[in-house]
Length: 189
Image (cartoon, rainbow, N blue to C red):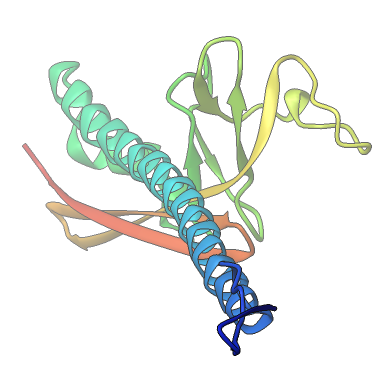
């Protein structure tokens, strides 16, 4: 306190009061928290988009396999009913799986549930091979990594000249289960 001319003068130092400081910290915390929430949602969205793209590609691959199989049978002079009979596994209520990269038995009937698809790290392909599933302790064998994708194909004969092929993919995105389905109608040529 300075006293000059009989008047009291107080030196005020510039600074924040305790309340101003607490409010500034609160606003800063809300801002940082919002940015972290935005980043977390962004990572979730990126993972979901990647998983959806893979599921769509696997779905399309299976439908194209049957479309190509029908076309190839026509080129090889295999009649329509023989082609339909060659895919009998897919007409059951449990459906079937298709592995276009397999050297033999590309179409297999599902028992109660279809097998999950594995990812082959060494050649970037998805497929099925029971010898390359993970061991009990979670380690992968022969370059195959387990996925949560399960592809089920079902066929339904709508008329003597038409077969509806439906492919369904289910997978886990985090803890939530996702499903996408697509169908094609194949007709006798």
